[in-house]
Length: 135
Image (cartoon, rainbow, N blue to C red; front, side, top):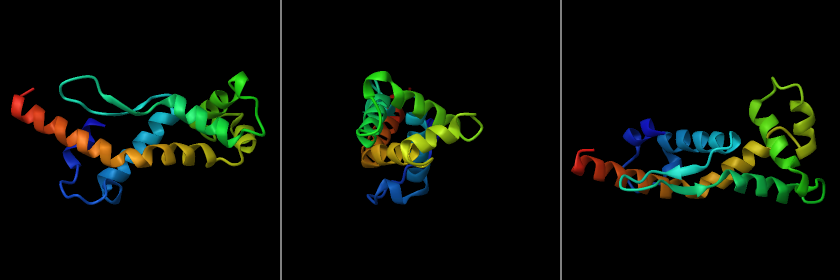
């Protein structure tokens, strides 16, 4: 995501309306699908977690509340299979179990979307501090 920092729009338009925002959203959703947290940079400390992978698991559990037993890690298994994509032999079954192959990616996008402007602001601040401090 560091490459996106160079393309952060300086205007106050919604970050998601920019090409960089759409790229960030795609990467953020991909991070969640691949068991990584979505984080905002911080030049002087630990990155801020905007959405944890666990939240995607919870969102899928909420989505499937009447269909699956959340106590058996079924959601995490389904997310892992769907993240691999159609090349996985169980992809069709996993997609069918959650209601379609776009359900989990859509949940990931929906979880990351509200954090786009927070990411943009944190990235700007991190870039400003790095430029001022020279590190």
